Image (cartoon, rainbow, N blue to C red; front, top):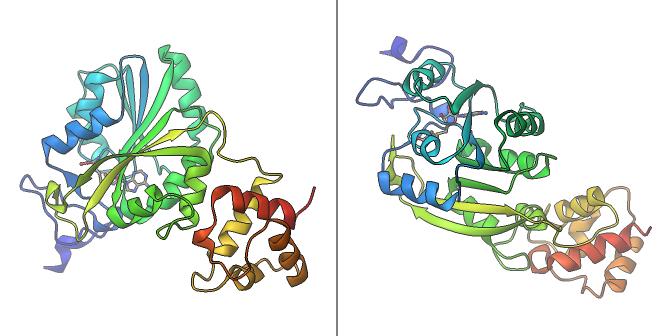
Length: 289
Ligand code: SAM
C-alpha cells in the first residue's frame, strides 16, 4: 500500500508498536534499551549545574533521564511530527524546551550563551543519539563553533566511531580523526548493539565522549591551511604524500618537496602515518609565515 508511505519523509517500513512511522530519511532508530540509556547519561557527566543540549530527541527516550539529572535541557529536533509528542510528554517539567530546527542550521553559540545566562548554569554538555547520515557534519559544526561547551557525548555508527577514536598516525586515522583530536580528547563510553534500537539498523554503534581541550593539541600558523593540508593528504588514501598533496592546486610540487624535507617527513609516507605534530609542521612549512 503505497499511500501509507506518502508524506514529507521516507518512512520506509518501520512502524513502532504504538504507531509512529519512523522516517528512515531522518535516521530514526530509537533507543529501547534502558541499560544503554543509563550508560549514555552517566557517561555524559551532567549535574544540576549543567545545561544539556540534546541533538535529535526522537520520542524522548534519552531526554527523560537527561531532564532528571540536568539543570536545563534544550532538545533540537527536525521532525515536526515529534514536536507535539515531546511537548506533551514533558509538559510537567519546567527545565525542558524543544526547538524545532535542523541542528546543522541553528546558531549553537547563541542558544548556549542565552540559555546558560537565562538559567544561571555554569557549564554545557551536548548529548545525542545522532542521525547517522549527518554524523560527521554535526560533529564538525559543533566542535568548530565558538559555542562554550565542555563535551559532546554522541552515539554513532561503529565504523565512524572507530575512526574518530583512533590515534592520529595510526592505521584507522582519517581526516576526521585529526579534526577531532586537534580540539578534543576522546573517551569511549560504550559499545551498543544494533538490537538496542527500534527499528533495528544494519550496523552496530558506539558512544564516544569528545572533551573540548582547554588548549589545542598543536600550534599551527594558519588553521585553515592546516586542515587543507590534512584534507589533501587524505584525498587519495593509497597514494604517497608527495602525490596526494598535489591536490593543493595553489602549491607547486617543488614547494611540497621542500616542505616535506624541512619537516623531516619521507615523501613516500602515507597521510595516516603522520602524527598531529607532523601535519602541523608540514603545513607550517608549506605556507611559511
Ligand atoms: N534520541 C532518540 C533516541 O535515542 O531514541 C532518537 C535518535 S534518532 C537516531 C535521531 C533523531 O534525530 C531523530 O529523532 C531524527 O528525527 C532527528 N534528526 C534527524 N536529522 C536531524 C537534524 N538535521 N536536526 C535535528 N534533528 C534531526
